[in-house]
Amino acid sequence: MSVPRVFGAAYSVYVRIVRLVLAEKAVPYELIEVEVFGPTGPPRDHLARHPFGRMPAFEHAGFQLYETTAISRYIDEAFAGPTLQPSDSRGRARMNQIISLLDSYAYRPLVWDVFVERVRAPAQGRPPDEARIAAALPQVEICLDALVELMAGAPYLAGAQLTLADLHAAPMFIYARLATDTADLLRERPELDAWLDRLIERPSIAATRSPFEPEAPS
Image (cartoon, rainbow, N blue to C red; front, side):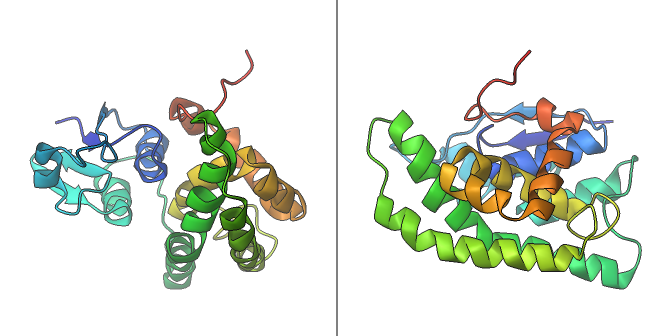
């Protein structure tokens, strides 16, 4: 069988989501590094795979896809391994609600507004934009509280079992924990903090480590 190919950068939240799904399904794949934020923008060959110049793009046996949720669901349904979507309609609806919440309301404040400014800006030799961080934190709190409510005491975001919702959230929250501002907010919500601890123990997380994360202690 043809090995799936993932096009994008290892540091990307959305590339890692796809890689996590592949790892959880134990599907071998090839990561082809693509940088879309360079001075000349996305490479021309990548625009042929993704007309909007984002990442990831995906190819399997001649079948091409872009958009992370479409890729993740395809992997879950096309390959053997543990099922990562609930079998009942309400469970799937809850999973999809959480994924939509993450994309619409959590990703930008958690990653671009807080992690990039608090962690990546100093690494790049510039001061953090404190006003941007401060403006993002109220939205972050709304998102965290909404997730706690939707978990309703379950060990995973959409219930008793690991789903695509958890794998969608994990890269965002791993970055969030690296920033002091959002790490503190997570600690104030022990349900989410424990959930993230649970996720980080999975081999798929280690197998897809971002180059922006510190090396795990040996």
